[in-house]
Amino acid sequence: MWTWSSRWIAGISVWAWSVVGLAQAPAAPAPAAASTPTAILPLAAKKLSPEREARIRATVGQTLGELGLFALAPEDEVRKVVDRLARDKIYRESCLEQVSCARRVGARLKATWLFHVAAAQSLGGVTLTVRAFDGRTGELLRRAARFAGEGPGELERAVVQATRLAAGPVLAASQPGKGRLALEAEPADVEIVVNGAPCLTCDAPGGAEFASGALEVVVQRADYLPFGEVVLLRPGQVARLQVALELTPEGRQRLEVEEARRAALARLAEARAGVEPERPPPPPPPPEETAFYETWWFWTVVGAVVAGGVGVGLYFGLQEEGPTGAGTLQVGWE
Image (cartoon, rainbow, N blue to C red):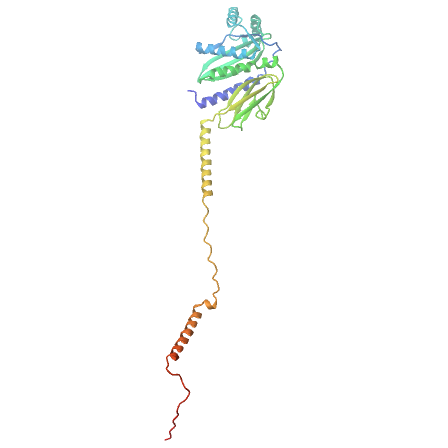
């Protein structure tokens, strides 16, 4: 089963293979005209079904044909020449490891460029190796390797990438010059590596400038599966690449936890903003000074005076005769 872990291992394996291929520093091919004679040698397959072998051969031929640099010899004619060389004990398993033998094969096929593909079934997928040779000198131009998983379309994708890498030196020699690579990635904060070196301006407006040929692009970020692609860059071309990285299961889990934490903090902030804080009750106002005529004792005195005045008035008012001021005084002596 092709799980996320095997995908990650495959991505790292691809990266390791590409570093090895770049470190070989293959010989530079001599310039050649466009659509030069090219031969795809018979596929060296191990434990592959005939259906898979046919798919690999067809994909290699289609990828080279799309470049417009190669005039591919018919497959049956290449097979006849190689069988004759094998009967003459010239084309053997280790033939292409020897410069003299590869040069003799190129001369017999009258091919400027030779391509050879080896594919083997392994645990979880297919290991692919594509080599490009200069048929005039027998020199190895480039070796490119890829691992294809069992997922749909992965075999074709791996074959295309390996074939493009192997054909890169031919494109660089046939069409020398410079172009630009402009990359857009999601998420934005990613690490971009081109041909084994970090590219800090590939995702900037206008991209970054590179010499024509094959560009091996790797985009990676923590918690995401790495993405790899091979871009063939021609002089004056601006190659645009859009990449959307896929989260690993662990990365997705961490992202969900972080999103839940942020949502909880947002809800807490909203709740705090909607409730006013409790305020202490205001202190009572200071007592006002009472005027004397508003006191109880003042009105008590007034009431008593009034009551007394009323009583005196009633007393005198009820008398029939008032005092006359006349009287008798009797004085006696004993």
